[in-house]
Structures are given as structure tokens and as C-alpha cells.
Length: 402
Image (cartoon, rainbow, N blue to C red; front, side):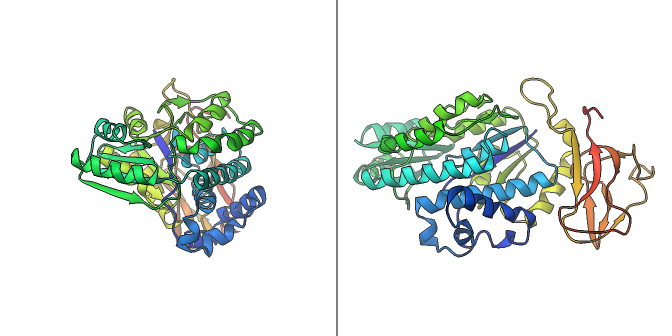
């Protein structure tokens, strides 16, 4: 099983889009700008750390960065069997699962961030991370202070609390008295995922009602209940409730752990979620895709893990989500196919292809298949000059009909 994870606020950094500007997936920036009415290219290339910390900017910038990474990975033919996102990342996860259109996601994120920013101005708040504390102890510390709640159950020993500024400061002191090793205030503009966000609900609800959701192609684990959801009808209510409910991320990781995933991939800026996964599942293979250089690492990790068709076993049966896939060129150059497969048979229609197998080269770059299947044919000719993302070969994966 492959699981895609999507980060929320806090992973952004100045010029985080720069490594992607020459990649074909960068075209999503213009599409997101048109959908949201914002200059997202400026946010990704020129905005300062201070500007990016503003909720109205942070959420859109992070969402689009995650979508760029997702698009780049999908161009390699790699798809998940389970997805989840942390807070804002849940919107990215819905797009990855086919439950929400990309442009609709950009519009929703713009409305959500605006609604939350206004709510934070009306009811100022703060957030703090408690380290070295159990969930139940953090809950008791919050119960002892008025106006403070648990906002994120991030991983064993790490809980984020939120509420009024005075309340959070006092709750940090109480938590340390109860055994927390550290308490660190998080530089955000509000008490997110608490009742302080109640006034944001009306605006987000209006946006959700006007948005079309679809039944998900793969399960999405929701923040509110750490449960898998597939139905389109579930999401307006879940996303609305998420505004004022804690993010159950540690519970989400426990659910994912039960599937014994072969690979977890964090899509977007930073590697916060990858770090939480390593704490919760030290034996799991986890990678972050935050720039194009990570794509080669991803293909290599999949090659080591084994055939992708073995990963496509969903919780409810043996549904295979990968069927017919295209191998594309990562760069421009001259395509030269390999003469034969690793098994010694000619590279032609009907040849069995394994994950990581070299199909040829474009200039000096090896073209490896990121999935296993039967070669239906080469799309590019021997000696043809190809462009980035141009199809090179067509494969049928196991379980597909021709």
C-alpha cells in the first residue's frame, strides 16, 4: 500500500516554489491564481516569511505547493491507495482522492483562509506545542484553564493546544507542572481548531454548499474522526466541523499503521508529517516530495519496495486502482530504448516489465518504470527528440483489461 499525506500551515518557507518553476507541474500555479483571484506565483517566489505567515497567504501557498508535488508524482504513474491531510492538508487529500476538483479546492481554501483570518481578528487566540506529554494529561491541563482546548493530537508525546492568549500561556505552565518536557508558543494568528473559530463557519458553509464533491476513488482519513470516508455527501459536514474540532492526527497514523503501508509520501513543503510518521511508525518507509529532486528518490524507493500492483489492495477487497499507465520523459532530449528487458526478452509489445526496470535513456538520464505491468508498446521512436512529460511507453498493469 502507498499512502499520500498532505501538510497544513507551518510548513511554508520563502521562495519554496523556485525549484519547481521549470517543471511542467508549475502550470498549476496559473490555474490556481485564476480560480482564487490571487497572485499565487508571487506568494511562492517572492513573499517574505512574514507575508507567508499570514493565514490568508499561508493556506493558499501551501495548498498549491502540495498540488504541484501531487501532479508531478502522478505524472510518474504513481497513485495512492489511501490519503490523509493535516488540517488544511485535508483539502489537498480530497483532490488526490478525486473527491474534489483542483480549482474548486483553490476556491475553497481561499474562502476558508479568509473566514479563519476574520475569526482570528474577532477572537484573538494563540497556539502552543506541548512536548513529552500524553494526550490525556494535555486534556486535563486544558480542562484546568478556561478558554483552552486541544487543537492537534499530532503524535505520541506531542499535542498542540489553542485558545485565548492568556489561557494558552497559563495552560503551558500547568502542563509543565504536570510533566510536559517543553511548551512552545507557535507563531500563528489565532486559536485554530477550537470554538474561537465558530464565527468562520457561516462563510465556509456557504462555500461548501456551492462546491461539488465526488465519491472518492480511494479512502480519505478525516481529521474529525480519524475514520476513512469515501462518500461525497460526508465532506461538507466534516470540513465544516474541522474548523472547531481537534485534528486527530496521531489517531489517523494509528489507523494507517494498521495497513502496514509499504510507503508513505508527504506531498508539499517541508517534512513535518514525515517526522511525525517516523516517530509513530519507525519501521515504515516515508519520503517527502518538496522539490523535483525528490522524484528520483521516490522512484528508487518504489523500485526497492517491490511491484506496485501488490500495494493496490484496499481495505475493502482487492480493488486495483492502477490499470493502464504511461511512462513519460522527465527531461528533453533524444530517446533511445533499451534492447531487451532484464529477463532477456526483447523490449516489445507483450514484454513483462518490473518496477524500476530501465526502458531506455533520454540523453544520459535512465528512464525507469515506476510500476509493474505488460508493455503495450513504445510511444516514442528510437532516436526521437522528446520533451519533458512526453509519453514514451504504455503499460497495462495486472488486473486491467485491454
